[in-house]
Image (tube, rainbow, N blue to C red; front, side):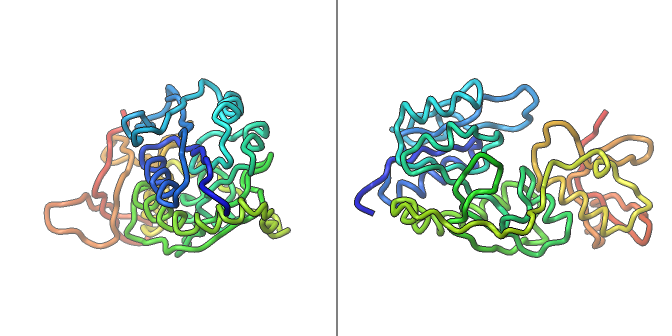
Length: 280
């Protein structure tokens, strides 16, 4: 690499963009702009704001994803680095930077392509997840791989924020090699030819808790939904307790201290609800 690169960061959340900017700048590169997301009406959480970024870094909030290409042409970065952006970038945006656009995906591609890879990994009982940097192309999560690793999926981890922090640490450790390969015009390795698996948002069929199911299944269902984070259409997991509907937030298969948790008898044993929000 002959010198510092101009790198645009494409990320929408305050948990993701600032650490990524810090990691890029720590390597001696410039970050002129972060391209975030204008808050949709159905978005329940916080989105990136200008106060989340360090001085000297612009924040652009395009009204539509089609405007991203124009922003990249205006800032003329060498590279764009995408992380957890909740919109599919058009081909015109992906190809705008001089050296291309790369994305970090929290799976071992081609497994678990799509917007909900960690939620599906939890649902399927995985004990670890991949972290993959890949070139972006016209399709979703199909580009050539520049770096990858795996990290443990801690069974005691219950939140998107907790998983994201570990993914970011692993991704940041891989970033120097990724940028070196981009600067050298290295195309990366094609993803395995076998068909990848799709990790879409959970459907209605997984949104309702069936108390006649095994306790471990319900416990996994609750954890998978909470790690998956924001869902644009479906709320879950919803359970009925004493005639009232609740969105379950935390459960345990081990009896908690006296006075905490609500014990529920399931299909093959007991489960305790530790946290829940009323639905109605």
